[in-house]
Image (cartoon, rainbow, N blue to C red):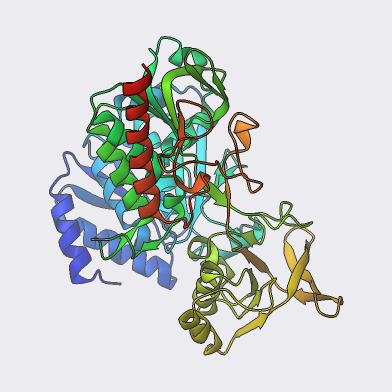
Length: 509
């Protein structure tokens, strides 16, 4: 396998940034993947005098570890880290060579302070856009802490291992041989699971002028607009970027022809940092109460106070709410066709939902799976006609309308789906290996209880200034009753909420 000219040119530029020598220890056999792996590491060695290659035996073949001469760093790639993992390879080479990571000092200090032995394994797909975040976070932790190791495992190269563990979603992470987590995780998420968050970190924080709860497009926009007014602004978020992180291609963000969710999320955070905003990540809100100031209690017990609050907690995938869905999540039930689709190559799958997202998922999966069945509750599909036409042109798809999903069946993993024909009332069953749920969103507002007015769907009711029924409390984005859940609309509503909050303070403080 030879690297194409574009990748090689990129690599050449990155390798010039290496600050020290790197030793690649390679475990290879005679299979085609091993041959491609040897081509890759030898090409890396030929491109930089700082890289040398040594053959050895590792726990998996084919694989290679990235080390300093005389020191094992614990960073290993099992498979060939190209595709979406190309950046993970480049960063591993640079960081192991001694180049300082682009991470906040507080994060670096937390990683270095972790005590004990932690051996991580992450199972990935090279087409997964969420996987690199996990791989890069665990690699960085391995470089910084000698008690931590990490092996990235390409599921396509180690298919039997993936199947033996019934892994049907990526990324899937194991720690010391036990399941640790699945799905996109930032380094803050991983650290939060390893090290208990301490409420004392928040004890001495002064009250904010504006506190934004949620870090998606609406939250980032609100925080930036508020901070630009020169007022004390904080933002507390479970993960910066919110659901945008789970979006692959974005083609309707005006003035940008194409971008990807994780890139946009990173840009949002980078922009927010330019304004001295107090960013508190990997934290979830638990309660909101209006007193002299507005109080927001976090799940770790800390209480943040502010003159005004902007709620922008976004939305999450809506669940089917049928037996088997929760039991087989990541065991055949999935929500991201881009991430998990490759794991269902040659298998039979169903997509539940006939809107744009459902039909787009079905079209995507039809190029991978043996057969795709779409189940739509209503008598007609809701997707754009151009998408329906494309789906109908594919030979390995079936559309079932007026179909009410009754149960996802299986034992250790999904083996089928049962549905009711709404016209006849007859229950039918389809044998398959995967179910992709694409039935819309539900707002992340459960934590509010009766603190603010919400619709029966849980959306926060706001006026044209983004104000709620509680003075000083505003809301923006997908968690509100604003129509049309789009990134660009969320950003606009975040700006409106920030301006509304500023106007409120001028008139009431």
